[in-house]
Length: 336
Ligand SMILES: NC(=O)c1ccc[n+]([C@@H]2O[C@H](COP(=O)([O-])OP(=O)(O)OC[C@H]3O[C@@H](n4cnc5c(N)ncnc54)[C@H](OP(=O)(O)O)[C@@H]3O)[C@@H](O)[C@H]2O)c1
Image (cartoon, rainbow, N blue to C red; front, side, top):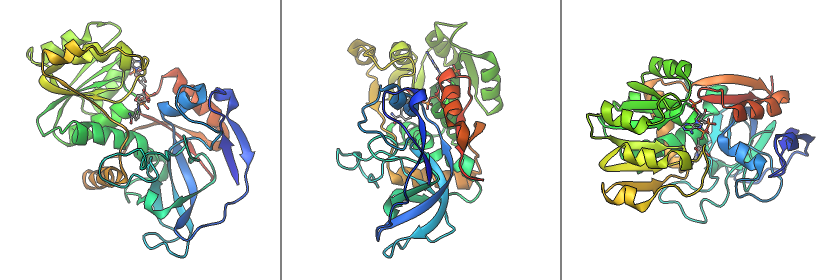
C-alpha cells in the first residue's frame, strides 16, 4: 500500500511517499481503507522536530475511512462501515494517564496518511451519517480538542461567553460548537476577510489582532468590562497574558496551543488577582469523540473544510497549512 512517512525534524521536504507491505490483522483489529486525512498544526510541529516524537512514522492523527476487513474477535464494526480513529489509540474514557495517552496516532505510533490503517477496534468510532469522509476526517484532534476545551475542561453553559483566537481548525470548530450550544462567541483574526467568514458562521463579534494589538481591551469593552467566561487559548506565548486579561474574575483559560510559540508567558499574578483558572487540554478521549460525533449528528453541523488536496499533493497541503492562509481545516483525500 502507498503511504507517507516522516522523520521528525526533517521538515516538510522530508515527507516521503513510500510503498509499505500490508500488515496482517490481529483478532481485535480492523483494517481501514483510509478515504481522507485532515492536517493539524501538530503535524507541522512534528515535521519541524518541535514535538516530542521519536522514530519515523506514518504521519497525521486525523483520518476517516471505510472498514475493509475485521479480525475474528471484532464485534463493533463490519466491512463497509464508515469510521474515524481516536487521536489517542488507548484513551477510551475517564481521566488521561501516562499509559492511555502513550500511543498518539501520527506521533508515537503510525497515523493515517496512508491508503490503509490497521487499528484495534477500541480506537474507532462510527462516522456520523450526515458527514462525508472529508468532513469526518477533521473530528479526532480538532473537534475533540474544541469539545474538551469548551464543555469538559471549560464547563461552558448556555449563555456563557467564549473568546476564540484566530481562525484555524480548533478555533473554527469551537465557533461552530459554541454557536450550536447557545454560547456567545468573540473571535480574533489577523484578517478582516476571515472575520467576515467567522461572522457568517455565527460569531457575535470579531477583532482584528493586527489592527487592534490591544484586543484584550476590545474584549473587555464587548463584555461590559467584565471579560469572557472562557478562552480557548491556542495562541501561547504571544497571547496568553492578553487572554488572561480578557477573562472575567473566576473565569477559565483552556490552555490548548501555541501558534505564536510554546514558551512560558502566563505569569502567576495574571491568574491570582482575578482568581482565574488555567487548565491544560490534551485533545481528549474516545468518549469525547463519541460525544462530539453525537452532537454533530443531532445538530447537523458540518465541519468547515477550507481546501481538499489529492494524496499526491500532501507536501503542498503541509505547506499551505504552514502559510496560515486557511480558514478551518485542510484535508487530503486518499484514494479515488
Ligand atoms: N492541546 C491540544 O490537545 C491541541 C489540539 C489541537 C491543536 N493544538 C494546538 O492549538 C494550536 C492551534 O492548532 P490548529 O490546528 O487550530 O492550528 P491552525 O489550523 O494552523 O490555525 C492557526 C491559526 O492561528 C491564528 N494565529 C496565528 N498567529 C496568531 C496570533 N499571534 N494570535 C492569534 N491567532 C494567531 C491564525 O489565524 P488567523 O489567520 O485568523 O489570524 C492561524 O490560521 C496549535 O498550537 C496546536 O498545536 C493543541
